[in-house]
Image 1 (cartoon, rainbow, N blue to C red):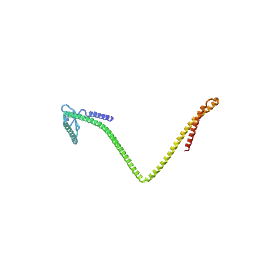
Image 2: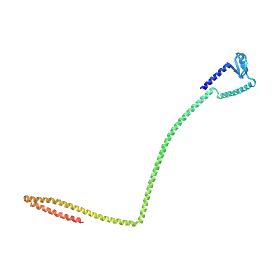
Image 3: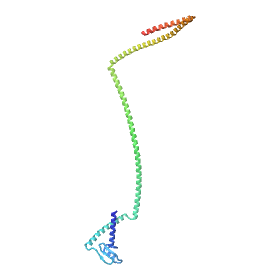
Image 4: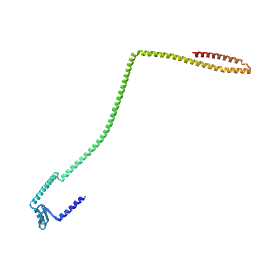
Length: 292
């Protein structure tokens, strides 16, 4: 900002100085044109390119002499030729561009093409967006399908593995059975004598067991008979005890009353004698059972 302000101030001061020094002066290329403008008709203050100043009063000052003037004209001619070439180039460009109407037509055509291209770009963008969304959905479906296929293949492999394992187990069982059969055959072939000895020993053991079982059965039966006769003896004793008590009561009454109860006594003594006889028989049988 400060630099721009300084440039503006310098340009303003230069303009003021030039205006003070030159004033309202016309600039011409050559001296003849300057003379015509300065002295014919309305007078003007004119200066030429080479520095010749023509005032309104008719004086002429300044100018260049000899080689300086020639060099100045030569430099100016080069500059002018360059400018002319530039103008010719610009004119050719203008001719190539054509008139304003043609430019407007070209502009309208270009705008139409641009609008068409924009529409195409928009359509292509929408197509690309749709394609990307479809591609994303397709990738999701593809991943799901791949996972399903992987799971399906895994299940198939697991089934095949289980089937193979079951077949292997069945074959191993069959092989073991065959080996066992072969081993048994060879065992029975090579160890028949040992087997016969074992059979004889087992037969002896079985016979001993049968004898011990028969003894135990006899003992059990004898014990059962003992228990049976003991129960009978107990019952007989239970029947004898109340009759003894009745007999005692009878003799007590007889000493007291002296009545006619001899018949009752005879019947009571007969029952007691029978029970005593049965008791003797039972005790004798029990003794025989205990000695068995």
